[in-house]
Length: 98
Image (cartoon, rainbow, N blue to C red; front, top):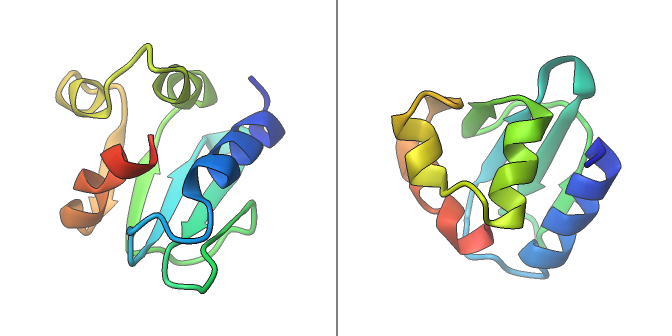
């Protein structure tokens, strides 16, 4: 899955209001970033790197596994597949989007 495919998938899932109420960034290293702006109305998903309330640092392949349903976000975190920086409460709301 490319970064553009992942961005489009997240954009479709987020819709106009995902209930996140915060800015969440997926930092996929050299592959780029995906930012969900759950504060804007309607919610927005883009690839512009900026400050976020919560940042998940993970390989693009791991994000693809979560988007396809092959990896539960809680399991991914508990097994060290990705790191969370910032507001853990925002990360917990990730289930709503995925």
